[in-house]
Image 1 (cartoon, helix red, strand yellow):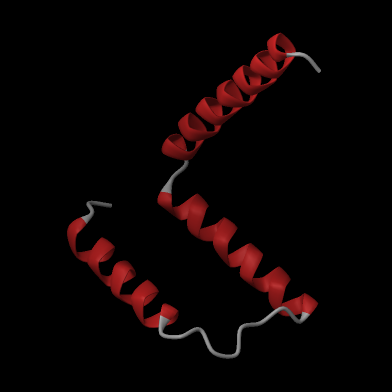
Image 2: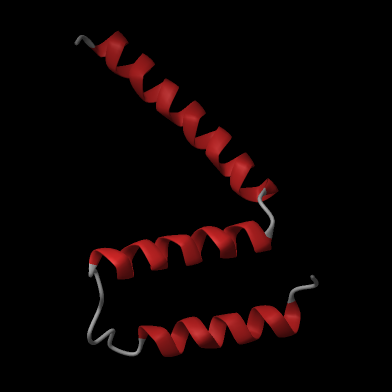
Length: 73
């Protein structure tokens, strides 16, 4: 791979990232929540768990509370 091919490769992935960002912006909160729950269920079924999250759950719950309070639905 020469320099020109490398630049073209990076440009293609930058375009993919732009499309992913647009899709993420257009995805509803309910759909993202459904996707998150599906991932969590899959992890539980596979036995992938975190025993000690170092307070991460508390932070997540705080953000969820703030979102519910301040983000219009």
